[in-house]
Image 1: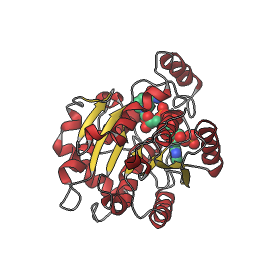
Image 2 (image 1 turned 45 degrees about the vertical axis):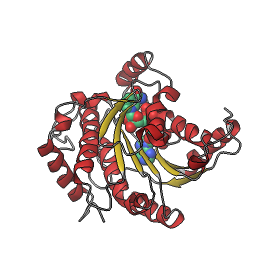
Image 3 (image 1 turned 180 degrees about the vertical axis):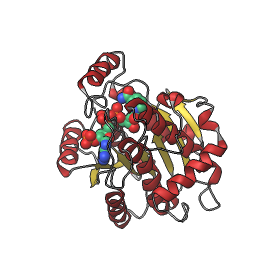
Image 4 (image 1 turned 120 degrees about the horizontal axis):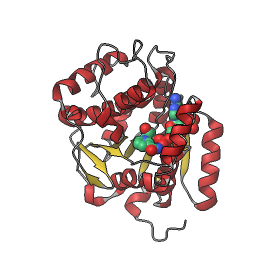
Length: 295
Ligand SMILES: NC(=O)c1ccc[n+]([C@@H]2O[C@H](COP(=O)([O-])OP(=O)(O)OC[C@H]3O[C@@H](n4cnc5c(N)ncnc54)[C@H](OP(=O)(O)O)[C@@H]3O)[C@@H](O)[C@H]2O)c1
């Protein structure tokens, strides 16, 4: 991939992408690098990050790609990474919360939350909060939360979000993806003065041929995913809407929407429930030990 005449406004931009070493996140990173954006790959190991950057540089030798390391299931690691990032980059233009996971089996993180809840929702919430002061300094800051149409099947189990009593991988996944949209829309409603210029949107990448359903699956679920993803689009296509929202001038200032194939569309009714959104916000503050989301 060789892109000539890079847009000089984009070559000044800094973008953080979580889950950047594989699947949709990797392709999103590569497309952003091709546009000349400085990208920071958030990965859970240095080895994975370096390998991903090496692959990107094979196609884009002048890619400006760096990395930051954290296991996003750990709030302690998210906090340490955020402190490090804020020192390295006082101003951030784009944050793409993309990392996601699927687990067939129930287990808890070190913070005692179910893993999909912690990685797919709480990490978006906490990391966004921690990066706000850097985003605020950009003149066109954009946050993109990678959700899924699975959220249409989701419900927030407020009394037991970790689904300790009634775990199923699909239930936990759909719940976490619904939380992504609720969080996005509630952020838009709650933005206080001084933060109005931050845009935030949720994305549905479509059914995409990645390994998400194979990494932590029992063999039956892995087989189902292999069959299902056969119908999916390439990870590059899956990355298109995130990249569009991250860099297009057409969507400058557009915020608080749910996107599919580079177009806004209505999310589920449950995602638009303002009472649930506020309840989820309060619960997430408590779970991440945040006193005030907007510093
Ligand atoms: N594929 C689809 O059809 C589809 C459809 C709708 C929405 N999505 C969403 O798209 C996003 C990307 O998924 P994908 O399909 O591209 O899957 P993927 O290839 O498995 O990518 C997920 C990324 O998240 C990272 N990640 C997972 N758990 C992590 C943790 N604890 N700490 C740090 N990083 C972690 C993974 O790192 P490792 O490589 O270390 O595991 C990987 O880089 C997810 O939010 C997913 O929910 C996917």
